[in-house]
Image 1 (cartoon, rainbow, N blue to C red):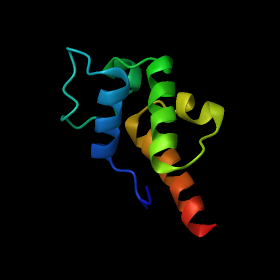
Image 2 (tube, rainbow, N blue to C red):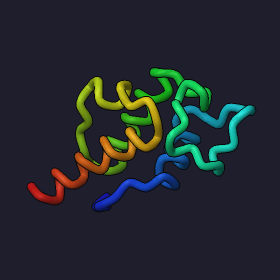
Image 3 (cartoon, rainbow, N blue to C red):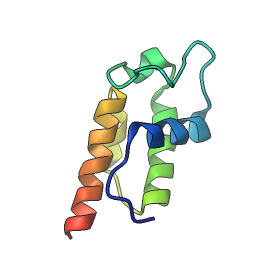
Length: 89
């Protein structure tokens, strides 16, 4: 898939596919700066989400980059930097 930007709606979709939606969380809320832990996602859920993003978008993410992302904004930034590198290279 050739996409130049990974957006919050893309992340919501992949999170739901990879790890489901915790009952106490509404992913449609403004979650950009909420910590994944507060949202109910642990490191395993983020690893699975990162793996799906890699497969779908044809990018490679550094091992710790996704787990180190504490918020959706940080996750989006990491993915978008890789997509930009892919487009530039």
